Amino acid sequence: MDAALIAKCADPSLPPAIVEQFILAVGSDDPLAVTVKADGRLVLIPKPRSPDEAMGVLKDYVGHAIVRVGITQFPAGVGVDDASQLQSDMFEACANLRTGTGIFAKVARIVTKWYGRPTNKELLPQLVDDTIYAWKTGSFEGDNVFRAPDPGGPTFFGTRSKKPAEVTDPVAPPTESEDASQSAEPDKATEAGMRIDLSRIGGQK
Image (cartoon, rainbow, N blue to C red):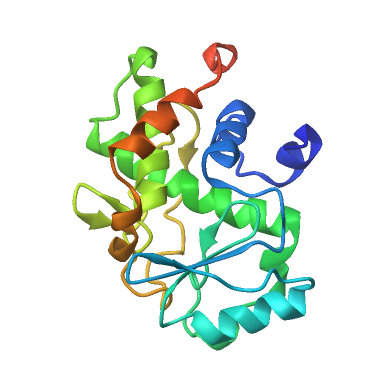
């Protein structure tokens, strides 16, 4: 992931090192990437060659399956009132990074709140792992993290959100808990193996 793109487009409450880890763990290097899951199973689709083709896939599956898009693989439909409002800019790298990291930051605040908003920064790797796991499964402690309201407060140990995000009641995809079947303990081990050195962000507030 290009550092300049992160600096320009990523949610400012997330340190660049965490954005890099997030993309490495769950993202794609293809801005046109579309992943479709139905009944917990991956649906094989032709690789989109243009934003128009990618939007065509969305129209076919959004509302009937879990559809994740772009470099951050966020669920299509988050933050819109109707599937017809979906915009092709979700397949543009900067726009996708902005939206995806914004949603990831909200999930991080949900996890951070559940942990009691700790101050011991040695817990950071566990907080990040749990947030990535929640992103993959769509669930944390039984709640759908994509539909849940933003609790505000600190994002891990960094910036506090100024106001709750407006991505609280997506129409599509359906319940993301359907995605839980893809994530078992092997994924947890994979995430642990993907950790990077976060010590350089320890001084940020």
